[in-house]
Image 1: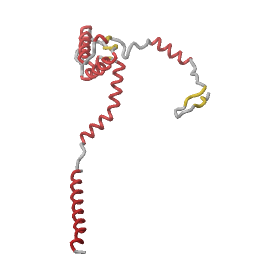
Image 2: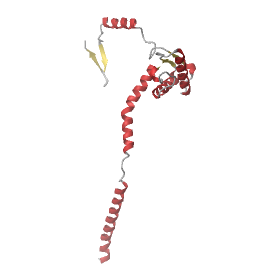
Image 3: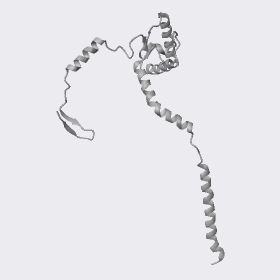
Image 4: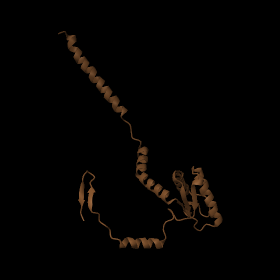
Length: 181
């Protein structure tokens, strides 16, 4: 065998090894990327607070009330919290329509009328058709029940025994089983 043919495999191995070394060093340089710490913190904060924000939004939607503390003292100007509450209520009213309660508190009749105008205009700016809503000074969350009725209902529920069902009950994994008494 000629000496040149013996050198070809050795040269090929040397070139291959040099090529691997340069590719690996280049790939290491390309992976020297540092994570965006601010982005990670923002994502963590969003994940931690999103559940609470959702609960607060749902509570506002159910209650549909604007209280005295949503306005600046002795003024018809909404606070930043008041503006946020009105926007959440506007979304719910745009979808469903209904009633909204603006609590009068200790406001004079003129101040209360001015607050109603501000809420009405804020809802209109939020896309709510004012013909679909009623603004009143009612109880938060709707009419509710009188205390006399609440006491009567509570006493009736205490007098009624809880009836334990009998028969068969479906199983989530399929089939059914007897309900024990």
